Length: 206
Image (cartoon, rainbow, N blue to C red; front, top):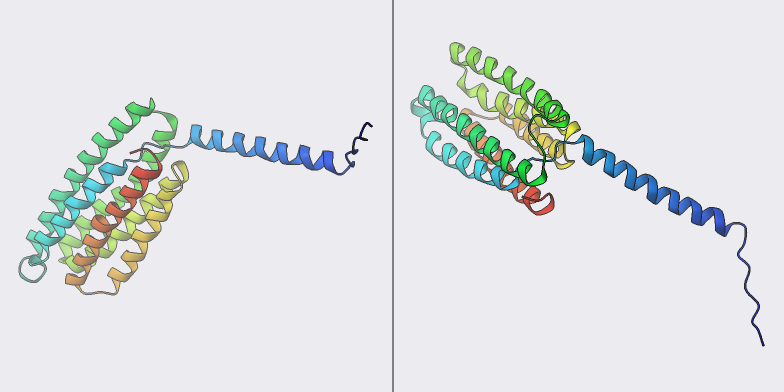
């Protein structure tokens, strides 16, 4: 005896079509996001930057009480070292993914990233002339965090989250003493780079 086929209700068909359409839209959106985002943020490079920053914080900490000018020199030496590590790591990661540092997403990322850092360089000069070394940790953390929040619009989602963490430390540094500010620099440029570097390496391919 043949079994009667159970007819599908009219409501079943639109629901199935709706689910399929939602899946397609999600796929298209994620594909467009990947195409328009700069994804060569270095995870392992960030980890290495964090380790060098921890070293700088340790070396600089005694100088907060004895020689703030030398304290500044330690951190100014760390900055170009971190920049070289980041550039080399980004080039290597981009090469593996077939992405150049001159692509439109990369240019948008670096433009947004560099503007707050340029402001930070000028502000560092002004604070150094005024002898306001204790204000530098807050300024650096706030502006570095701002650079990640602004450039994060053109990169992976974890980047603006990292920027927000840096800015939070910057607010705390603004309310802290000079030695505590140096510790917060180590926690930010060191600890946050290590934590987010590992996260990026594991989730976004090195």
